[in-house]
Length: 322
Ligand code: NAD
Ligand code: UDP
Image 1: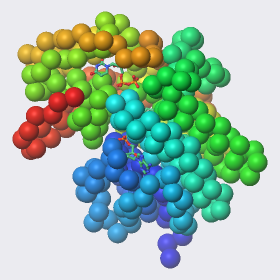
Image 2 (image 1 turned 90 degrees about the horizontal axis):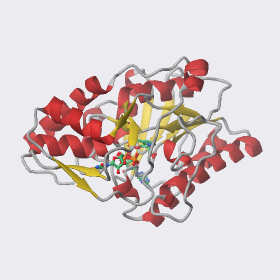
Image 3 (image 1 turned 30 degrees about the vertical axis):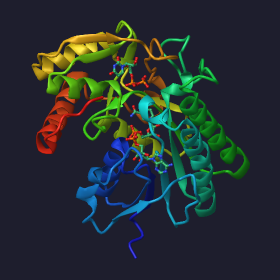
């Protein structure tokens, strides 16, 4: 038996971020158990890993308990795009809350270290800018985003309570808008929507007047940060992970049109309810404690993402509409 090789469970491992994380963990010499119900993820995201003898793909829904012997758990299972998490809101909140309980139970029994993929959404529509970890947020508990925001807030509470009550070795990372290859083409999030629209020459759909802001983090930077967080011994978080460079949605649309050389025109559409007006992480804590800072700037990350979607559209041969 190889005792240096860690056995690591990644729930939501066939999704966008999860597939990059599985790939990286395997590359670093670990054994990876990828758990997914394929709601928003796909086998195609991890098909290139299936020949690796240290990779295991398991169809499983985290709202049900799961038994295995593991050393570490990354809990990523949860739809992340507003379109998908609102599709079955009750299932979304069950996934966050029951999924956290089941993964924490597994961590408690196996003494595994467990990391929660939390979100900037726990700050809601923030009244403090940029958002630091000690800000408690401004969340509507009864709106259409609540199934996700409140589900993730409750998951953080569960993580802290399992830590205080049962000494479970936890980590909480609050992820800000992340993009890159393997986002679902119909995911509904802004980067994939704009890139797919621009590549197909369709209208670029800006919700509202485009003055709302987001800060976009490339997926490789996030994976680096999550691995650093998992490796840290005393620090449990919560810690923000995002790229602090803030852009308006209109600036993003213009950048995507420029980089794709597209003939697409911008179309303004109604702003969804509770859509946060501004979002920018304060990443001082991650810099100080983990010596982590994102390195991939928007233009470079967008070019990689555009290349991915260009190939996908070319090989699949049919149009994607958001
Ligand atoms: P994604 O939708 O691509 O991945 C989520 C994965 O979880 C999918 O593979 C999906 O099939 C799986 N899943 C959903 N419900 C499940 C269930 N009940 N049981 C088992 N598997 C289930 O989204 P992503 O962007 O890769 O997000 C991954 C995690 O990171 C999520 O927890 C999300 O909340 C968090 N996050 C992402 C972002 C971002 O910008 N991408 C920002 C903040 C937080
Ligand atoms: N958005 C947009 N057009 C789209 C998709 C999203 O203008 O086709 C806007 C959306 O209203 C929000 C921002 O882009 O203001 C980021 O949306 P996304 O769904 O990517 O993430 P989140 O709102 O969760 O930050």
